[in-house]
Image (cartoon, rainbow, N blue to C red; front, side, top):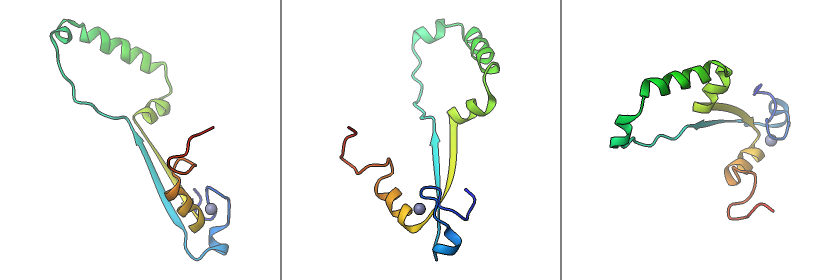
Length: 98
Ligand SMILES: [Zn+2]
C-alpha cells in the first residue's frame, strides 16, 4: 500500500492509470450471544481468566490483536478492482478448487 503501484499486479498507478482504487479488508472475530446454563455457574471463571491471561502474556500482542480484528488496505488498478469484485477469493463463484 504505497499509493503508486497496484498491490495485486504491481502496475504503476500514477503513470499508467487515470483512476486508482483503494480496497479495505476487515476480518473480525464473529460474535455469538452467550447462553448461560447451570453448568456455567459451576465453572471457576476466575481461574479460567487467569489461565487465559497467562497464555496471552506469552503471545505476541500484534498477533493477538489480529485474531480479534485484522485490517488491510490495498491500492488497485481498474483491472484488479474488477477482478477483486468478481472473484474476491481468487476464483470464480461456484467453481471448486482442484
Ligand atoms: Zn492491478
